[in-house]
Image (cartoon, rainbow, N blue to C red):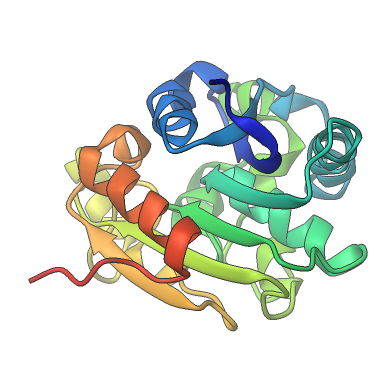
Length: 220
């Protein structure tokens, strides 16, 4: 029996990635009976505000037209910031739950160091430069979360050369502490890197746990 569209999960990949990066997560969600919307988006083509409307808004509209009565979200990296922006500037998503995987909820130091490099600016687009750690950066200007959200941080850094930029553990791109955000319902750490964290079995297990129960499994 195919998944029912009544419970739909919108899956949002991160910057520099495509929907393929979320394929294992997408498969796991479908096995649990969720309908999913997991599609690539043109992350280079706009600011966070522009992408939030074009990416999140259109997917919510499509889910509702397909018969979804409950819409949840699973995001990686930039995808989480797009969701936060949309949720803050539009009607509350009543009954929704979200799992943000490795989100730069308070920015990342790497943007401050590398945003002016022409190759990165070209490849990543304007949204990359908005993820800095300054108080007026896009994520830091957003308020507390308006929907029930669990945040998963990674603690394995596969890029030792970046370690000097961070104060504390990181996933190589986002420091563990900078994934936190006011209003989150639960928070956990898994020992994985930013690039592959969404494919890890324990990340997938924790994601399914939060969508089902509103909390992560206790790690012994």
